[in-house]
Length: 79
Image (tube, rainbow, N blue to C red; front, side, top):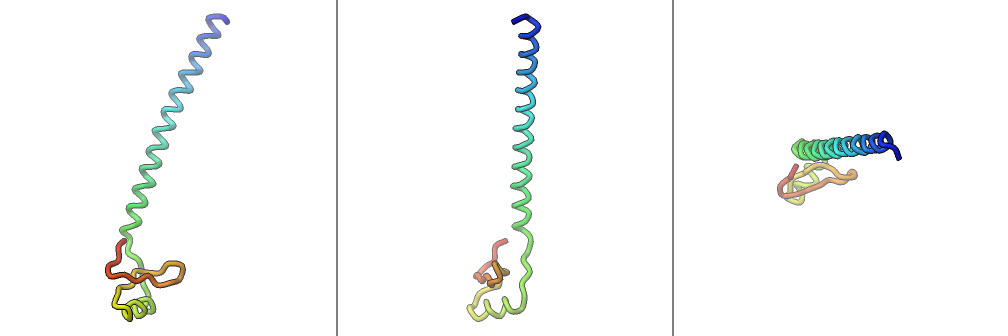
């Protein structure tokens, strides 16, 4: 193989290494942003309706919202 061929292969290898390193940094940033979004969503207060409040008051608990159409009752609602 000629010297020019070796230089071209070396250059291609370097380009591949640099771009894969940049992609991994971008992937980490995307994962970090996804974690931050999940944290922010947990702060949002759930809306409850009167039927849920009545259902949970009978059980001496607070209505924390609905999951799959069923009321979720607890002593203290988190998130």
